[in-house]
Length: 216
Image (tube, rainbow, N blue to C red; front, side):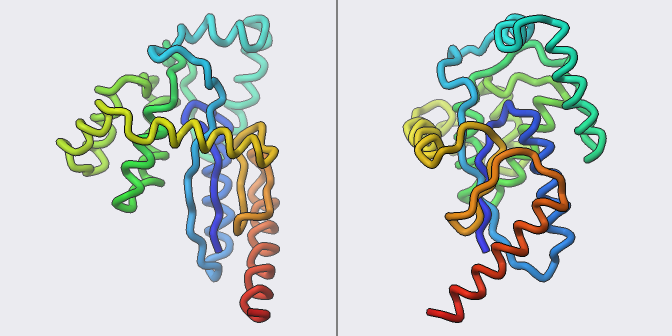
């Protein structure tokens, strides 16, 4: 079975959704799953250098009091899956295009999922600016990626168009929020659903896969 996770590296609910999906997969050890990680841009018009975090949040949510309510709920959800969000450490909301490119580069050597986890951890826990090339290079080094090739890749524009194309493709599929999970290329659910919900969807997709195999 294949599950494609459509996500943004700057989306805290995507971090929660990742952990819940991991728990769902642990509860179904008999199901063989291949995970893919595909870009979505919550802020497709974000300046390349990012934006002051406080200004961004007030613009997005309208007031500081609403920001506190929204992020308080996210922090509570994070605690339920062992994520200690440290939103107060974040100073910049970055442009996420290059961080998505890092995931694609890492995936070439089977380290895409590790790159996703490292980006989430560095941004949401350490407050690092994952829009900066130096930060991404350091994350890549920590994953054991080949340094010279990574530096050349991050300095260039390879797969920039791919990120925007995948974002557009998600919207054409009717996906307007993340995380979204696509099971076997057809069944789609959006949102950081509870582990039990995701586990039931894994079961349903597994049955569909078995039926397709039997009829072929």
